[in-house]
Image: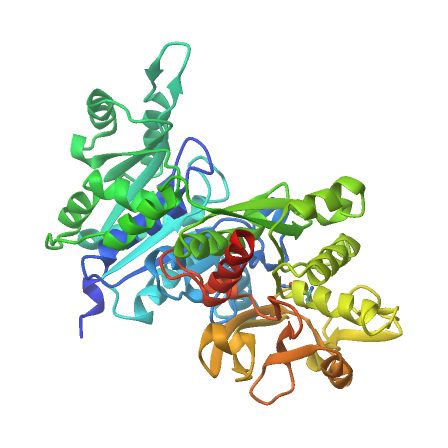
Length: 539
Ligand code: GLN
């Protein structure tokens, strides 16, 4: 087994503006290094004070991604998993909130033996411990750590100081990559390097000299720009990597490889150069860029429709499934809060199928019920994810079983027919953070079901993030009227999947299959949903 000390560390910082895509660049580099046979993992440090993003508004922060071990993480972890095709865990996403709560817990326990507790060394040591913890998870060849935020932010300073110290202590095994923006000014027709120069200077002021600079730009820039950046930022011209806007994020590994980022990184880390290919990625890109493919129009009914990042894994899973079916997938965003208005139902009519993703709180529930009813009655495919399963069950109870007051106790605790209710062990909980049923659980599939024909497996494992469950007291009534409980927990106590028996494709699951979809390994449930939609639209 390889000794830990040989693990190499790549730290990625960002400058000039936020949202340049550090996560995508890190993940793409991970793909290239993995394709060379290296064992790679990715880690993200988030500077905010929330302990995890689980309680954060998706409107502000985008989707909450859930790992196999049930950690609620930043959406970048989703990119990491989709790109490097490895499952990550709670060690891979660290926030300032986690670090400070650990430091304060130690202080309260008296672990610091009366010393004054300070950012340096106590907070920085705790951060370094998490880099070491990632290393100790497995004998990784390379760990890529992304520092959230932008150089110049006050809140990321402890992380930057920690990685500076870490490099000081592990000189031969660390490099820094700095991601910046090279804007193009239409008025003068020039690319500008000054923001990059300033950002690198700012980084130096805190003791970090970057080894590689990755430059985002709206289009390809000439070699002189690289030379200028190299001269002013103290790196070689080859160490300046251009990363122009791509039509698809899945093209970024190909862009970076064409810029020979792997040659530069391996040489700086003292690793031997080796060949690799990105055939799967190239094939995937060829399919998605292919013109004149058939198109399916999926109605995505949610309350955060203005910001698609709120449902990022769902939209990515749909794209992967469309590529696997060699078609394009148009997503029609339908705001569930306005669905009862006439133009809302017109939007439904444009759609070839309906997807209701996960969600919390009663805003927009009435609209989601209209959408589920529409899919059931018009026989168009319906995929319900978590809340989307609750909606399907409530709609069925009200309109088929005539239980007019059927509801989830999440939305009406005093309803007459609580067909969706609290998990039995959740009744006493008062804290909101990290207290749901989270992470991977097994699900046993009924052999005589659509679900089985899709997964072709008797037992599967999928990730969860919810508090409420189907109420088993109503199971028999549902079954007698055309609902099949095709997926259940192994002990039979929890419903995992329901499907309509007299409908071409109506499946709703308690879990979130979207978290396990990968670009060139579409998830079976999404694949079949798109396949069925495509068949129905072309028939
Ligand atoms: N709000 C529902 C629950 O807590 C569904 C959660 C979800 O869709 N992720 O059970």
